[in-house]
Amino acid sequence: MAESMEILAPDAAGIARAAAHLRAGRLIAFPTETVYGLGADARDGTAVAAIYAAKGRPSFNPLIVHVAGTDMAKRYGQWSDLAEVLASAFWPGPLTLVLPLADGHGLSSLVTAGLPSVALRVPAHATARALLGAFDGPVAAPSANPSGRISPTTAAHVVNGLQGRIAGVVDDGPCSVGLESTIVGLTGDAPVLLRAGGLPVEAIEAALGMPLARPVPDEITAPGQLTSHYAPAGQVRLEAERAEGNEVLLGFGNVDCDLNLSPGGDLTEAAARLFDCLHQLDAMARPIAVTRISERGLGVAINDRLRRAAAPRNT
Image (cartoon, rainbow, N blue to C red; front, top):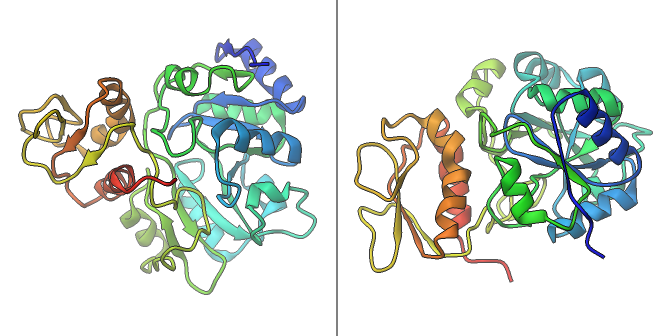
């Protein structure tokens, strides 16, 4: 039987209701500064399994665990000097750290997809922080959308994708960053960029005083590394100068197009609008062409999402 989805306000009553659902092992979508997350108690294997079922997500793809602060993060991941540097500089915020699992962590093995590491983040969004405080525990939360499809940056996106599959969504308007978190691996000798995201790589490297290494190709060690991901129903063509055939054109900067990420060429605005624009174009049920977007700052993460959206689909 399909589950009825509650639309919860981001007030004390709504937060309390959402936390009660989490404690009961049910799934709740909630806003973060990056995208809406689909949350479950990270210690409850049955609840975490429900995330994979609701999303249709491959079980080899690990989940990010959202925590209220650094003290809670240290319960689940082995802390290091590099973790302290990055957490002090960027938490709360759009940065996920992949750390070796701490002894006695108590997390479901489904959260880590059987890996000896865990992805941890302290979100900056006030509503997310209120929910984590009310729940007082670790919340596993990938993006609140069917696996491989466009990530949600509004509650309406969540409803459209997961209606009937989850207990509810806390609606607090659109996400401000609009791209998933940047993921840095701290399980080896050198920090590794596992996924570009809402925090520019240049800022992380400046804080560390060293460059980030790049991951081993085709090895899944963190969320968001599947080749085909963030995909609309129609095919996506990149580096386009104009629309061809039945395509709709997604532009950036001063270009003639059907929908523009940022007419002024602002990468922060483009990042915040990316998934919402893809949702709008997806509704047109036509192929999508995308003009060139600068490969600098947040443009690195924007282009990463677009390349995954354009990749051959997983079957």
